[in-house]
Length: 390
Image: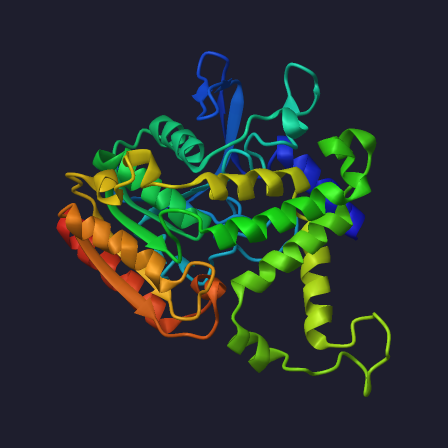
């Protein structure tokens, strides 16, 4: 089963089970690394119908290990879309009323050009020959996609974590194209602690002998152990101590006493091992390197002379920022700093801190207070935009 899923994941890198927008050699993506990427492709999904005025489009930006399958079954794992609790017919982001777009980011591994994609100049997977990708590069590619779809101005751009970084980049670089923005559980730059966790993960991947200097696809191998360890370390940061204690405590895993060995004695150990091994079946190891590096490089204030408010100068975009009390990956202080910058720039901004012990991943879960905040903001923005959403 694992081998079949892994094969399917590699197949998806070049021939995705979704819509694909292709850009030829004459339509390059200009990268922050100082080079052009061409040709390239973007895999994406849409839900709902674009209205006649083309004014009801919502772009959803995915997090580090997400993909374009936000509200439909994942073709690799068969699992429901990663935000089906929020998006769909009759849900908070109602696809009966909104036209929802979600694309796999450049550098990803489910159909948009990334390290597992075939390099047209060699006929082999890009591997580490793909230039380093930034959050701004991801957004530039999304702009090109939205242009191809004939949409001049998005009603809203929504995303959490790395997706929230993309939302902030959209609002900063293309304010005239974003009517409203919902950055969730995110920040305007990656902290040194977050960079440190990412470096641990990258080193785990690259230390795996099966990584083969990034050419493991050509070698017919997979750095499963290294990527699994990287996922285990990262997954801890998505949770909270309170949630871990409530769910696992110090409970033993399928045994009545300690084994005095190094098997998974505790339930939390077994849980993390499962998270690690299930992750390697659906995600490309090199994409993990590229995605984490993109987050590390993100620093919106540094791109504007060190003053974050200047990133939003004269913006007309409406903002709602959401944070969670137990999120220690992107604590509330990160959102507050963005709110302060937006206030300094004279922007229209609201801010909600959700009380929960479910950690960073709370934005992906069934959190009624979070849903209420998103629903209230979108309804208010829709009224201001002149949209009928019921």
